[in-house]
Image (cartoon, rainbow, N blue to C red):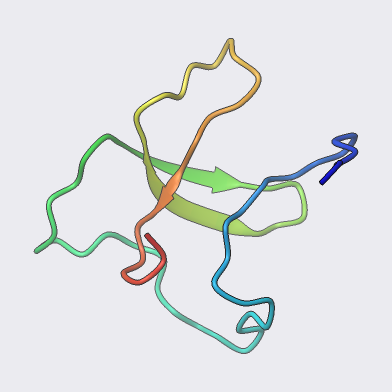
Length: 74
């Protein structure tokens, strides 16, 4: 597969392509689940907020991996 990455917001592994446009799930960490890595919140230019953890973020590097804080999306 070839991808053009100009303007790429993110690359995600998904279980299906349907999504949940009406979902109002909380985007916060469950205090009973231990956190591995650094907690981060990512606010995209289109207003979407992603909350998760990373072990490789460095502000001077062009990319990083983020693992969602929401159970079932890990």
